[in-house]
Each structure stands twice: as structure tokens, then as C-alpha cells.
Length: 500
Image (cartoon, rainbow, N blue to C red; front, side, top):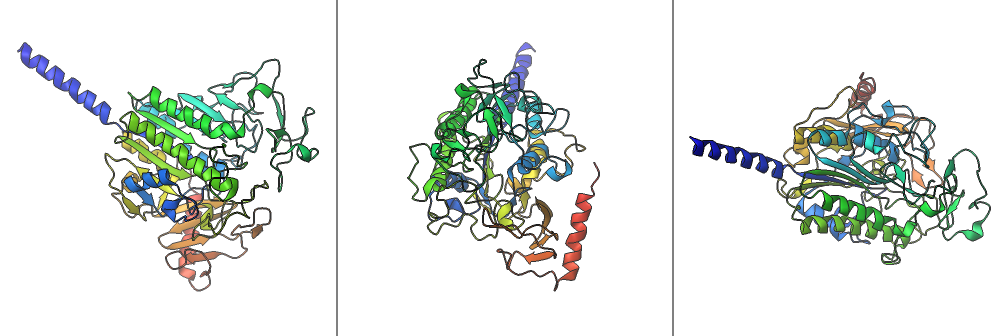
């Protein structure tokens, strides 16, 4: 009897260990401003991205995947919360001193993994606000922070590379801050006597083309004013190395337990200041160079997984927060040195745009142990990652706080070739894609961004495009297809009126 008891005991232990060992690690690598045509596996010819291509070769490359917005803060908000950002006031592009937009007490993507027993971490660009109303205390504890919404570990920049404060925040503290040199930040009026790009252009190593002419940090004018914190300020050239090393260390430290890592890179957002290893290597100026740098960072993650024997059972999602922009405020020759490269590929528009280049992005899912490599035209949205990963890990979430996310795990795994019935996108005005059709709601906004030379997709008349025959959205069929137009108008209305 004792022998049978111990045999059953060991069998149960073995079953538990097997269950734990087969729970996949999950990494989201979230690029910044990377366009549909910016990587070679999506058709780029002028720049090579072998590590991103490697992900695509062993995973699924999606051709019809979308962010929820054409700018960064709302896309990131939707990805992490499962709620369209336009439902929450104040989720436009956040300033560097914005209060936390995602507050404790709601469902979030990291909480789903935490509930499932995962170690959770975020590294890189946050841009979702920090601290209470009025903004964070940069000289004390930064709270609320990612640690309060499901992440166990956090090493981030508060907003973007072109916004102050230009410091890293490790969990709740600014890194290397000298208490005798406190940080002060303002996005309303000048503070201190730091030189600015506007008044002291002779001090700039990268000049601005529009905006970006306030406090100079590391020879670059920024958005906003900052004084103090000199020992804590980052050096842009080292940012990719620092973030990538933090991501690698997180993987190494948690190699023996299931983990979720949200690795949000700064590349290829402005200011584009590549490390000297990549400077001048692309032949396309700094924008091309930081694409190479981004690809290197992806490669370092893959090398780490290989070295630790984790590659087979790690699910990687690679994507971008919105579409591409070339001149986004600095004179970095991005336009002059394109050399025939088309960041948006066959799509129209770009970052900030209601046309599809604003929100249709590279999207690759790799999980060698479970996913068969291939290409999928399934309609997918980043907003569904929360519900899909809840399904993967056997967790529940609060649909009242995450009302828009749906479980499309079969599509992410390549088992469902259709995906969503529709996706909603936002870029000042709303868009809906359903099947082959796209509807853009009427808008009185400008048709062009003169500063970025981007078609914004705004028009006082409704727009309707057949994406199967007209992926570049050139032929507006609204007048000749009134029934389809009305159908999509009603669909958009029903989604916008959804009550929590």
C-alpha cells in the first residue's frame, strides 16, 4: 500500500512539474513608430532586419494586424487595459509629467499574468503617465507606477525620448539622482536657467525642424522644460543598450519560472541617436540606423532565450505602437536619405493618420513549441491581447474595466484564419474595418500635417474603401455603395455607444 501511495505521490508531483514547465513565457516587443514597410520580412529592400525576419520565419507574420490608434499613448493604453483609449478622457499623447492614466483596481494585461503565477516586468518606454494628479514626485517615490497595476519589476522612461524628464525610473526611483540637485519639470512655462534649443541653437548637435526647441539635454532640444537631475540624465546613444540589457537581465533572473516581459523599445522614435556601432551603417541616416539598432535588440532577446534553453516554450509578440513618420521634429536627414525606402509599404498615410498606414503595423507571433510558421491574413487587433492571454493562462478578467478586448487566441496561434469581425481605429476621427471594407467617419480636421508631410485622412465627407482591390485607399466608394456605408456607420455607432 505504501509503495502505491508513493508511486501516486511522485506521479502527481511529476504532473505538477510538467504543467509548470509547459506554461509558456511571454514577451511582447513593442517598437515605436515602426512602419508596415520598415522591416525586410514585410518587404523592405533598403534595410535588412535579420532578427525580426527570424521571428517571422519561425512564427506567424500577420498582414492585417492593427493598433487601436495612430499615436503612442492611446495604443499603449488599449494594449495594456483592453479598453479603447477614446473611452477615457485624457488619453491623448501624454506629456512627460502626466499623472498615471492606468490606475489600480482595474484589469490589466500584467495582472492577468500575475494572477497566473508569472513574474511580470516592463522595460523601456512607458508614456502612460506616472504619479497622482498633478504629476509624479521625481525626487521621491514615483507612485502610482507600473508596479501598482500588475508589474513586479519596472525600468522605464516616463514618456518619450524627445520629452523631459530625460531620466530612467527604476521601480519607484529616478536612477542616479543626486538629492542635492532635485528635478523640476514644466510643460507650461520656462523654469530654471538651462539653455534651450530656441535661444541657443549653437549648442545643438541635432537641430530641430519643428518644435523640440526647449531644454537642451545631451545636445538635443526637447519638448518641455527641465532643470536639475544632471547626474541622472540619460545619454541617448546608450539607451538601446541599457534597455536591452535590462530586458536580458529580467529573462536571466526568471529563467526558472514563467515570466511575462513587456519590452517597449524607444527605437525608432525621435530623436534618432544610434549608438556608434550602428551610426552610418544603414546608408539611410539615423532613421535607418535605429532600425538596425532595433533589430539588434530583438536579436539579443533571441540569443538570450537560446542560451537559456527557453526558445521553444517562449511566445513572442513583436509589433509597433503606430505607423511610421519620417520628419517628426528633428533635422536628421530622414527624408533626404530614404533612397527609395517606403516606410509605410503599400499603405497610405502614416503616424497620426486615419489611413491604414497609421494603424496597420508589423505583427509577428512566435512560439516554436506550439505555432506552425506561416503568414496569416486574419484580422487582429492589439486590444485583444488581454483576453487572449487570459484564455491562454486560464484566468478571468473584469469585463467592466476591459470592455473591448476579446479572446482571439486561435487567430494568434494560426488556427483561425479569419480573426475579428471588425476593428475600430482612432486618429482624430474614427475608422472601421470589416472584411474587405474600411469606413472613415467624416471629420473637419486638416487633410495634411504640413510639419510631418503626412496625409491625415480627414475629410468632411464619409470615406469607404475596398481594401482587397484598393489597399492604398485611393478610390472613395461611399457614394456608389450607400448600403455598405450605412452598415459600417451603424457598426461604429454601436461600438461607441457600448456601456460598461
